[in-house]
Length: 556
Image (cartoon, rainbow, N blue to C red):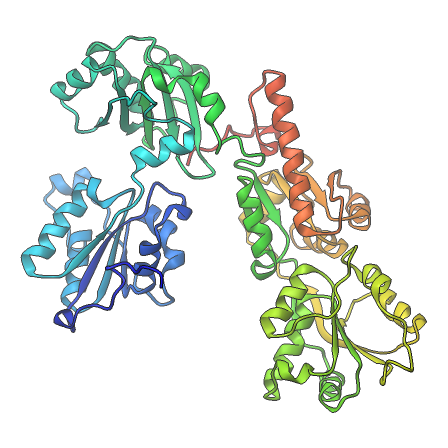
């Protein structure tokens, strides 16, 4: 039996009817850094209280319908004028807890390093409201790790943490006199001032410095410099002045965080598609595993459905076929898409049937996702193409009809209304009778939001993955033609031909008709592009940064 966490046991009866608060660390920004306990607490929350940027990180793990009251932004003018803040975080936490709600108060990084969270804990303790603390990955530790900057070496370097906003002369003097690593929390436009404080306190101007903004996210960017050159590096790189100057950064100072070492250890920003906005013209359900794969390469996937699925205009043909499954009309049923599985499953549920109705029927499936959808339904396919995942690949493995071994000669083929006749013709040639049934209709999806359309036509995306000829036609139809700086990746020759017919330059062709091989091919393209830039001594940029008037890598 696996060990259990003492924090996951049911709430003690002494707290029954009373509120409970979980102070939760959301980490530096990467949702993947949330702890298991954090995910559990979020799933059970009645109320979730967090600043907007933190809410984006944790909201996906909260249950549907969780209350997320908006925090009041307190500015200096309001404070000076004596305007009362009635709905700040502390008041919201206490109000919800007094009402018997389970409250999660999420903060950036770790709650133990958040002064406001500490004050809110004291308020809970004063009123006898039970609370717990779920630690998170602290920004001052997580961001350097993602930047490839180790804080200690085998000699056990001393590490000091400084918040430049609250550091006084004594603090600067202490860290300036030290030769250990200093991790400074500051803002982009205050880095040079913090560097000046360290030099004035005794640090050498040639001490290496790394500055990271938007750490642990795909917008992360890190600069290498020294205490004496950071202002010049920012000026030459046109980093500052910038309206983003107020954004928080983590600066690491010390000889043992030298740029040469970071060049070898920068594992995150060196991913092949780091920061690329990749357009995936599929629904979220279809694109889930593909988007996960793209994220593993450092990309930011953006799903845009190009087709919508609707029931057939006349359901009688589908109804007769499903009844035929039950009465033994078919020897085989062949699924060529996830949508076909979904259509049959919905019809089964309508009749009160389940996977047991497939008993005695052989099941074929084209594609990994189609097979996975069948397994989820409770059906293990008898035949999946051993080679190409297509109608042609299925026909290569499909057995010819044998009247001795096959008591029934009929195949049920539930498909889209626009499916090709390749599979039907091939099965007939093998001696089978085929009931080619329209299980669903595919129609062009509604256009995406205006900002997405503008990004497609204006070069805001770095790449687009086309998984079929219809995705090419439909995307161009509902959103316009992708900009010529956008990398076009196609799943196969037929899709590439359609893309070229629409005036697109095809940059990447998948070696196999698989969405995962397509993503892999795009990553290899990105890696070659990155290596070529480094070899030429050029900065590594994204394709979208080549368009006229494009800004440098975003830092928000």
